[in-house]
Amino acid sequence: MKTLGLIGGISWVSTVDYYRYINQGINDRLGWIDFGHILLHSFSYGEIKRIADAGRFDELRRLFVAAAGNMKDGGAEGIVICANTMHMFADDIEQAVGIPVIHIATATAAAIQQQGLTTVGLLGTKPTMERDFYKDKLSNHSIATLIPDADDRDFIHDTIFEELGKGVFTDSTRRRYLDIMDKLVAAGAQGIVLGCTEIPMLVTQADVPVPVFDTTRIHADAAVAFSLG
Image (cartoon, rainbow, N blue to C red; front, top):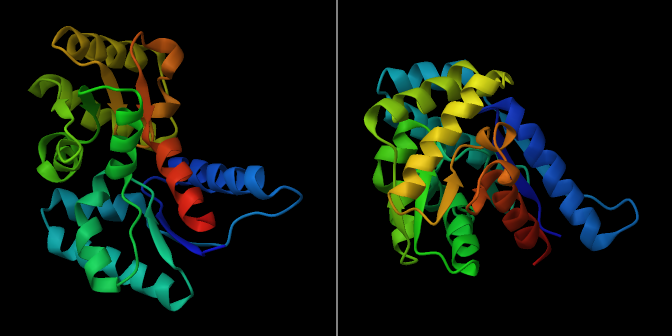
């Protein structure tokens, strides 16, 4: 079994799910009371957001590279970044640290391909929706990406930080998310990527008539496969 290094805290709410899903997945495969070999570096969400809001992305990159390096020194053989947005640094981390980063978008692309879809809607923070680091990984697997309009992107981004990242889930926010998904489906999306690890705690497959892709669980499953592969 390979040791996994989890970079979490962004937010702690979804990091808890990662820890649970990975250990449950390993136990499902191995049985008895066998669980994962896991190291965890947990950031303060507020510190990360303040640095990001100030546009100091080089500083963020250095923080994540250092965290991954510390976990490699502690025995980690693969890195799991417990957030979609911070995968903007995944390739840099892998190159700098020299161990695999299990990429959330690559794992999600594989799940989309398994369902035979070619166009998906993407929800997440504004960097996840607007920058290319995520969409390019999907495009490399011949998957086109649709994103919400500017007002809806603002709403999703703000609620991720002000509500979901604090463990606050309201019916009014859920309804707005579902309306946004309906617009993406009307525009041609065959499925919806829940591209923020807190969104699956707000909406689930039962709420949506097209396939939804829970990136937290997909990523955790990929981490299990890596650890036991």
